[in-house]
Amino acid sequence: MRWDDFRRSDNVDDRRGEGGLGGGGGGRMPVGRGGLGIGTIVVIGLIGWALGIDPRLLLEGASMIQGGSPYEQSQRAPAPRQTGAPKDEMGDFVAAVLGEIDDRWSEIFKEGNASYRGPRVVLFSGATNANRCGMAQSAMGPFYCPPDRQVFLDTQFFDEIEQRFRGCAGAPCKFTQAYILAHEVGHHVQNQLGILDKSQQLQRAAGSRAEANQIQVRVELQADCFAGVWANRQRQKRDYLDPGDVDAALQTAAAIGDDALQRKAGGRVVPDSFTHGSSEQRKRWFMNGFNSGKISACNTFGAERL
Image (cartoon, rainbow, N blue to C red; front, top):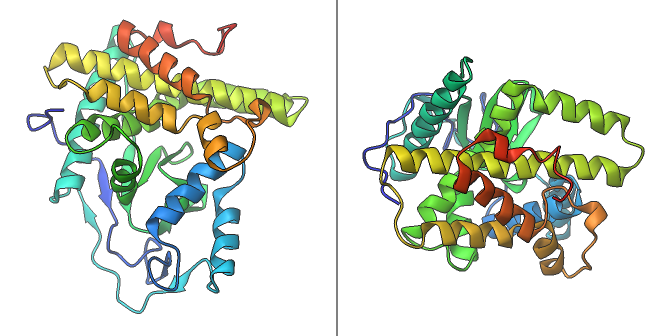
């Protein structure tokens, strides 16, 4: 993936290195000796997504088993918070991809005589305050906070994805990382279109946990499809894809399907517990958006077959 000429977004809040809990000296996630390594944290997060369990509960349990607590107090003073486009390579990459995602969605919304305002991306290390969405922790993976219209991302998650998933290594992994960010911004698009509010109403009215999970699966698969729409529109604008980029992203999408994660966790596959969709579904809906470049191809709520 070639991204050097991407527009850098200033809509980035870089909290990495500030000491862990956004603002005022808080704590940090225990990493390394005496605590949970980032690999363990990411795996716990993936298992939590697959089983529909709050990853924070799994994290607390794993930390207690290792003889620690979910948090450690940091003794160092928090570093000054940076805003605007970060200067390191990973931060620069996030700012670059975000700039292009916002530009393409602005164009798409304009086609429908609507205006688009992109989300703010918060980069952090370990944990930080996610305001109205509580605490952001590495174990939760990248996520979107609808009330504040912010995406929270511990960039170590990208490093872990590259190390753990076959097919995503080196240059091809950059598009996989862009897909992950585009998926989270896809939730922001849903928020602006009123889809998240409607889906939450449907979930509250659902007659069972399985039915509510199915609604959540439709939300997540639509975000995958929206990521594909962005990738299509970006390709029309710039010749940025290299051979193997899309395949690497699809392999990662398959690896984080609910069925694949449940198998990896050593349990049986329970479709009623799915919250993000199966490996096949995630790949297919991404390709629906990628092949069409149209929002209309992403109507997971009207589709009989997910």
